[in-house]
Image (cartoon, rainbow, N blue to C red; front, side, top):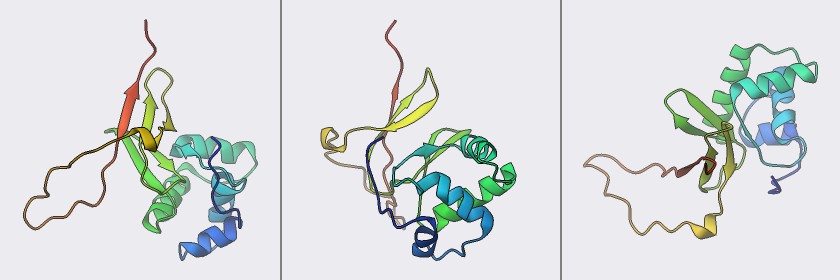
Length: 140
């Protein structure tokens, strides 16, 4: 992934979201944004990455921290089915490709997506977002 975002570092990134820089948050933030590149992770893949760097965090802590990052607007959750969520450090509106054969998520080109109209929200509701996930599989 070549898209870059603000490279002010994990502490400033957490601060932007109003989050206290605890040891666990800093460790996970560094894995997510420390190199300035956007990425898509699952809780499990982030947990494994933390283990390989020697950062002692439990899987429950990873889930809780990702939820806190989402609530703070630092990352967005992209659900590809009822049981699989990815977390994206690029919080701007953009579509995704979900590669079914390999189970990973990548950004799709925004400039190629045209949505002419979305349905009106029911009375008493407003549209919070529109998520576009394009599922791909290899041709046989």
